[in-house]
Length: 640
Image 1 (cartoon, rainbow, N blue to C red):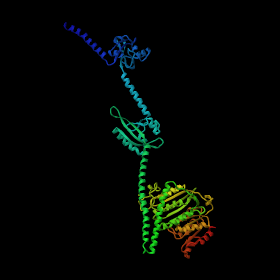
Image 2 (cartoon, rainbow, N blue to C red; image 1 turned 90 degrees about the vertical axis):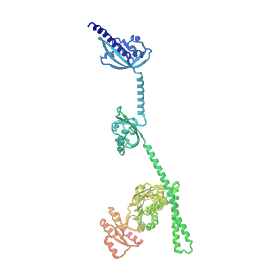
Image 3 (cartoon, rainbow, N blue to C red; image 1 turned 180 degrees about the vertical axis):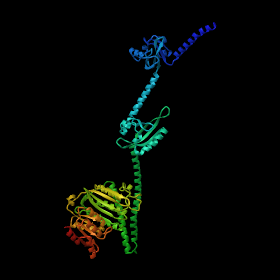
Image 4 (cartoon, rainbow, N blue to C red; image 1 turned 45 degrees about the horizontal axis):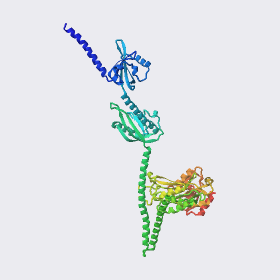
C-alpha cells in the first residue's frame, strides 16, 4: 500500500501536463488564426502562431492590442459591443470583415465568433480565415457571371432553355424580340405549341433523341411569330446535367434563317428555270430547224418535180398548190420568229385606229372556218353588237394576230366538239374569247402556257402538234401592248377558254347604255355558223338589234327560260338541228312564252313541212336557201 501511493500522486500531474502540451500544439498548428479576447474590454488575451503570421506581429505585440485595433471594416465600438452582447454560449456566428496588418495593409477575413466561459468569466473566441484568394476567385466568378449575363441579355442570337418535358424555363430578350412575344406569354409553355403543325411530331421525336444524345446541331424548324406568320429557324443546343448526372435543362440557340432559306429556294428555282430555259431554247432551235426544213423540202422537192416535161397539167397544178402552201407555212414561221424578236427588244409600237370589230371577226371567221371544216370541227361566231356599235379604237394588226394565234391553238388541240369565237361587254371592258372542246390543259401547265418556246403538254416542243411554241407567247405580249390581259381557264379533256380583256374604247359617240336602250332582241337558232353570220348581217342592215345565238333547240329553250321579261322580240328557228329539232323546241318555247314570234326556216318547203311547223307553234315560215328580200319582208312584218 505504501509503495503504490507515491506512484499515483506522481502519475496524475504528468498526465495533465501532456494534455496541455497537446492542446497547445493543436492551437499553434491550426489552419486558421485564433484569437481569445476579453468580452468587456476587447483586449486580446491569447492568439496562435498563424494569427501572428497573418498580421505581422509577434505574440507579445498582439497581446498588447484590442480586437478593435485589428478591425479594418470600420465598425463602431458600439456596433461591435452589440454584436458581442448578442452572442450566446454554444451558438457561434460567422461574420465577414477585414483585418489590418502591422504595416497598415488590410485583407479580407471570415471570422467564426463564439462565447467561452472559464471559471464564470466570459471570453470571446474568434477563428479568422484569410479569404483573399477566395475573394479573388469569387470576384472573377461574379465578373464572369456578369459578362455571361450581359452576353445572354444582349446577344443577337436567340437563347432558350427547356425542362425535361420541353417546356420553357428561360429565354433571352433576342428570343422575345425575334418572335414578338412577352415573357409571361411563353414561360412554362411547351415549345411544340409554338411550332408549325407539320413540325410538332418532328420536334417530339427529335427532343427525345436530343436528351439521349446530349446535343443537336442545325435542326430546321418553322416557328410561329405572334403575328401568325411562320419563321424558319436553325436550332442548336446541348444538355445541362446535375452533379448526380441527371437531366437539368437544355441550353439552346436558334437563328432566324427565313430570308436565307427563301434566298436559297429562289436561287435553286432560278437555277432550275435557267436550266429549263436553256433546255427549251435548245429544243426550240432543234424544232425550228425541223419546222423550217419541212416546208423547204416541199418547196424545193416539188419545184424540182415541176421541171419534168412529161408532167401532166393536173399534177402541175397539184404541185404548185403544195409549193404555195409550203411557202405560206414558211412565211408564218419566219413571221413568228421576227415577231418574238421584236417583242423581246421592246421595239414594237402600238398604232391605234378606228376598227369595226364585227368586220375583223368575220374576216377571221372566213379564214379559219375552212380550216375548221377540214378538221370536221364546227366553228361558231358570236357578234352581239351592230357594226356601228362594234366600232372601237385599237391596233387592228395586233388584235388580228392575237385572235389568229388563239384560233390556231384551238384548231390544233380540238379533234371533236366545236370552237367558238365571240365577244361581249362587261362593265367598261371588251371581252373577246376563243372557246373550244379540245384536250384541255394540265393544271400544272396553266402557269407556263404563255411562256416562250413552251407547249401545254408534258413534253414541250416534242408532241405530235407542230409549231415553235411561240403563238400564245406572242398573243400574250401583244395583249399587254394593247393594255389588255390574256387569261385561260381549262379542264383536261373538256376544253379551254382564252379570254382577252381590253378597255372598251367605243369610237362612236354612243354610250353602252344608249347602245342597249330600246333595242329589239332576235334569237337565231341555227347549227350552221355561215347561216348565222348571213342572218346577222341582214338583220343589222335592217334594224339595230341585239342578236342571241343558239346552236340547237335545247339551247334555245334554255335561253327563253332565262328570258323571264320576254325581251326576245323574234325567234328565227331552224327546224333540222342536232340535240333537239326546231319542232320540239318551238312547242316548249310556246309553253314558256305563248306570245313568242317564231319564224320557221328549213330547206324543205313542202306544204306538209309548213303545216307541221305551224302546228308546232311557229308564227311564219321561210324556205332555204334564204333570200335577203324575203328575210327583210319577215323582219319588217314582225319587228315593226
